Each structure stands twice: as structure tokens, then as C-alpha cells.
Length: 107
Image 1 (tube, rainbow, N blue to C red):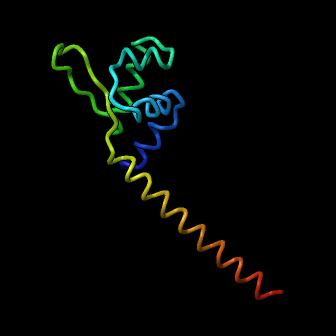
Image 2 (image 1 turned 180 degrees about the horizontal axis):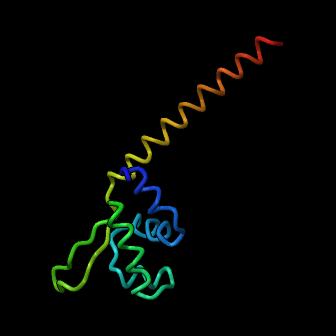
């Protein structure tokens, strides 16, 4: 699976997208994320594992407590996703532009 596939696969689940939305506001501990998405800590842990495996989030241990993990977004997968979306958009813009020219010529 390439990086883009891993990103899209991780984002396919609405709970994981909600976690990404929450982390856009800044780093958060797992417990706070679980509470925000109204999910048990073990259930959210599985989602966080998928997000980490896809490279979308990273976990750092807290300074005061090594058991506390603070989750934050990693920009690289989102930059790659945006670049791919830009390419798709450029393709369709070109196709629609060509179609418009064709229609105008046929008039």
C-alpha cells in the first residue's frame, strides 16, 4: 500500500476523520479525544493505531507522565493528499475546458 492509499484508508472511517478534525485545533491526549468522540479508550485506541500506521498522527509522551500520550497531526500525508487532489482537479478543469471549447465550436 502506498502512502496515499494509507492516508485514504485511514480517513475512510468517520470516527478517524473526527479525530483529525479535533487534532486540527491542536495536540490532545487520548483520553480527551475518546471523550470528544464519545467512545471508550480501548475502542479509540484502535482508531489511533490506524491513524499512526497511516502516518497521519504522531504520539509523544508527556513530560510529567510517560504514560500520557499527546497526539498531534503530521503535515506530510495531508500535503501529499492535497497535491494529488490538485492533480485531479487540474485534470477535470482541462477536460471541462476542452468540452466547453468543443460545444462552442459546434454552435
